[in-house]
Amino acid sequence: MKHKEQLVLISLLVLASLVLAACSGQATVAPKTEAPAAEEQAATEAPAEEAPMDDVTLKVYLLDYTPDTIEWLNSEINPAFEAEHPGVTVEITEGSWSGWDTTFSGFFAAGEGPDIINLGSEMNTLYGESLADMDAYLGEGAWADIANFGPALENAKYEGKLRGLPIFTAPRYVFCRTDLMEDSGWTTGTPKNFAEWVSFAEQTSVIDPATNSLTQQALVPVDAGSMADWQWWLLVFYSLGGELYKADGSPNFDSAEALAATQFLYDMRVATYGPAADAVGALPTGQGSVIDVNDETSQDNGAVCLAHSGWAAPPFDRPVWENVSIDPFYGDTENFPNSKPVVLAFNDWLAVPEYSPNKELAAEWLKIAFSKEANHKWNETMSLIPARNDAQYGYVVESPQLKIEAELAAEYGVGFAGIYESSKLSTIMQDALGKLVTEELTPEEVVEKIQAEYAEALGK
Image (cartoon, rainbow, N blue to C red):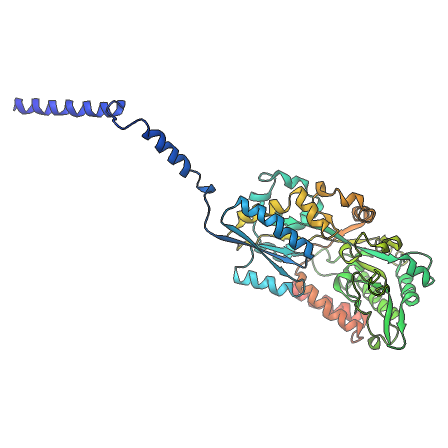
């Protein structure tokens, strides 16, 4: 028994010595070169993020941009992004503002679609709940550049959280051909109240009796044909000091301002087309801006004044700018003391839907496409004002036209935002205003119809 205990003791001592030798490294017989080789292999394999990832297509959906804009994105921005993210391909799809609501509703209903979508100013309230909270990727704590964005950034938020980034600020001004005004005998400049506008329309619009069609139109708002676009109505309404909603959140289309705006659209239509408005042909579609001169015919495109954003005006290098004024749209102070000059500011922006599986990649693309230099270039292709304050250099300050536009926007800008159920309101208003210009409804019936239908749409 004692002998067995001695054998056990010896075995334990031998085992302990082997363990100590292994721990001390003295029992390691492998060549010294193997350890660095193993470390080099580990170092090569460690940064999994840098290894090419599985093929991913980041889909970007844009609406109605210039060919120069798309070419620049495809030749500069996308290759730069793809070089930084091996295995990722950017795919840009071009859509149109015509039918946008059906397109976007389809994306959200299906829960799949582009990773980045192009939205308008008012759409943060419309789609906000379906958009991703991007503060973790683009907020102050994640991206220092966000501090360089101006007021347009508010249009890219919902419930205080970033849902994307704004591209530009595109206020709508009144551009007028001063030479055509003078040729028509109008010498007092851009009209500054409703009565002046109606007189101006009667005096400067020209109908060719041979074709019974307009050859010169006093004012072309957003919709040249009917002159009854809902966004044009809103600009007129805001110029009177109108508020779209009452204190309880219900629509305010039964207000005096709403009726006056509607009556003005009707009066301008009749003053432009004459009593038999429906029988008169619209201004022919020209080449380029409606206030420009056609290079092929050397004839004016037909409009004396244009109420629209800068992208609908002639390019800044066109000779016609020697005879073009830029003004806000004035209200009607004689009848509405709260009237004010207004430029209705639109801020297109790019948003990331909640359904996107590539939110972080989307944010990285946005950072490249919205750098100081890129935001400058993007807007230069459209002659618009960059959303980033630090991107407002070069053509922005060198252009006399943009300098005036920026000053007017700063002083008279009213945001086209905060509109609830905007696609429904657009449909309701376009239907009612269409019946106004065909005289199926009176101005009083139009606002009554809009008020009732919009209140129902809002559940009010």
